[in-house]
Image 1 (cartoon, helix red, strand yellow):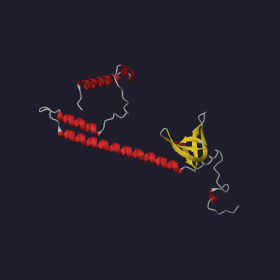
Image 2 (cartoon, helix red, strand yellow):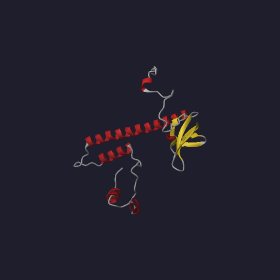
Image 3 (cartoon, helix red, strand yellow):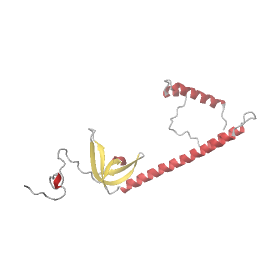
Image 4 (cartoon, helix red, strand yellow):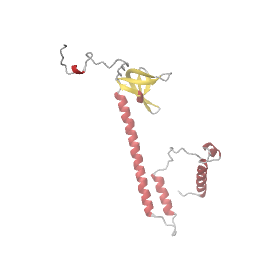
Length: 191
């Protein structure tokens, strides 16, 4: 997997184009010039075997006056192993999270939930109903309530939310008005 002069010149040109993009060149202008712009979040497709092939090519192309430092190679090998392991752990955690979310959604089937949704005026409305099913829609876990589909994240409560007391009621307690002296249950005689 040797790198030719054309690849080096393309890499150098792409680097120069990237430098100039920070001064105002847009991605569209660079694409018109023939450069390929990749998304930073996009997977480049390089893996551990690509790294090993680069290492073997470096060992094959070393010269007497430009010998490869084996300590650096060993450090790079360890780093690539760690990155590979971390990627595997991340994939496992992602799978576990999806599985746990699906299990939780499935446990809601048959239960009454309160779902929050916004109406046309932008006000929050509470929809109360029984969960009749669950599924995944465009990568998002959803539930079905009253024949409508809602994201799992829109659940406000499992069950029905209590009514909010109106302001200005004075906060009276059950059993009538009490004064500080009557809290113990004893009554004081009137004079």
